[in-house]
Length: 395
Image 1: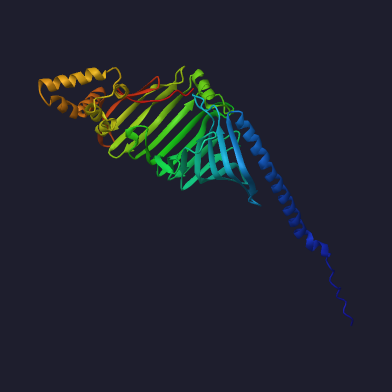
Image 2: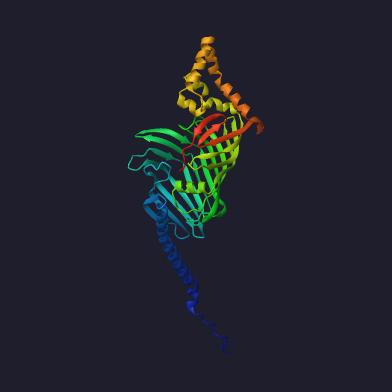
C-alpha cells in the first residue's frame, strides 16, 4: 500500500531573517540618534558659553571630543580655561583659570544628570601675566542634576586640595585640606522665579595662611546656609547679582555652623545681609568651648611687647590709641620697675576675662563654654569688643 503521509510544508526562509533585520534596523536607528545627539552636544555647549560670556565669564576649550557610544556621552575638554570679567567689586583686570582637562559624562537614559571630573593641576593668573596661583588635588569631581540652564541641585568635591602662591620656581603654601565638598539645591521657588538656595559646606583638615592666625591651624567645618533674595539664575556678573539681592532685602541665614580646631569647638547661627555700600551687616549667636585657645592666636600679648603699632591696635581694639597705651605701661614701669612687663605678659588673661564677661555660661558637647554674639558692622567683624577681621565690599 503506498505511503499517503503528506510531505511537510516548507516555511518561507524570509521569516528567519525578520528578527536579525529588526535588530539591524534598531541598531542603525540608535547609532543615528547617538551621533545626532553627539553633534548637538557641541551646539548646546557653545550656546551655554555664549550665554555665560554675557555675564563676564568666558569659557574656552582647546580641544573638545565626544565619546561613550552607545549608551552614554563622554565629553572631554583639553586645555580648558575660564576668564572672569567684572566679577568683583574693585573690577580688576580679567582673571584667568586654566585646567588641563575636564571630562563630563551623561547617561542616555538619565540625561539630566551630568557628572564631571577635573584633572589637576589648575593655574590662576591675571590677564597676560604668568600664573600667580597653582591649585592641586588628588580627586576633583562634580555633579549637576537638571538641564544645564535650569539646575535643580549641584555638588562639587575635592580630595587633598591645596593652593600655592607661585613666584617663578618658588611655591608658597596658602591653603590646603584633606577634603572639601559643597552641595547646593533649590529649596523653594525655581531657577526662573525667586529661587531660595540651600547649601552645605564641609571642610576636613583645612588651614588657610596669610588671612588670620586663627585659620592657620588645622580645622574641620560643617556649615549649612539658606540664601534668599535672588530674582533668578539668569547670567549676570556677581556684583550685579549682589546689588539685586541687597535691593530685594535678601539675606544669608546661617542655619547651623560647627567648627572644631583641636580643643576649640564653636557652633553658630544667625543672619547676614548686605548694606547699601555692599558691606556685610548682621550677627551670629555663637557658643564656644575652649575660648581661651583663641586669645593667644589673636596675638594680644605679642603686640603689647612690641609696642602695639596703631594699625594693629585698630584691628583688634578700635578706639584705643597706641600712644596712650604705651604711656600707661611706661608709667607703670616708672612707679614699680617691671610692673609694665608683668601687665603685658598677663594681657591675654585679661582679654579672655573680658570676653567671658560679655557672654553667659553655657555647655557645648559636654564641655564648659561661653555664649556670645559675633557681630558684623559695615564689613568689620567683632568678637566682643575686639575687631578680628574686615570683609571687603561685595559690590
